[in-house]
Length: 112
Image 1 (spheres, rainbow, N blue to C red):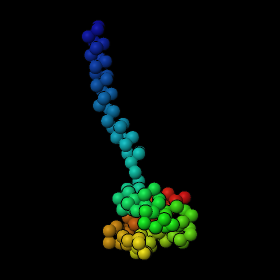
Image 2 (cartoon, rainbow, N blue to C red):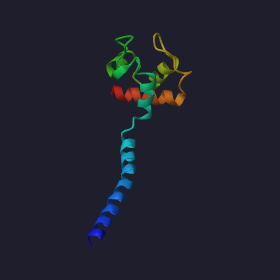
Image 3 (cartoon, rainbow, N blue to C red):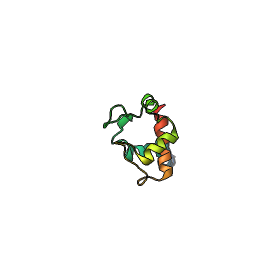
Image 4 (cartoon, helix red, strand yellow):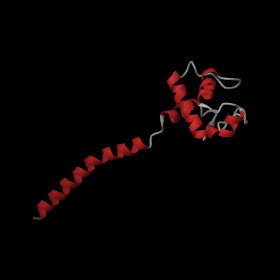
């Protein structure tokens, strides 16, 4: 009887361990950064860490600054990211139009 109980418990816990990695993977997928966040981290955070600006203090990605600089719509941000302006580099040769739209949408969402 004791052997059967030990065998059953061993079998039961082995089955649980086989199922756990898929549950962990599901948790990791839920907390993975969005494509916009990944693009921002890779291409923008060097100058705009946490929405700031290490080059020009008044040109942050905070909503108030975006409004003041008339870059407070996705289209305006797309234009700026695509073509650049002053110290802001153009990214039309580095990112696809879809990536530019994705990161622009992310910037505006974070500002709000």
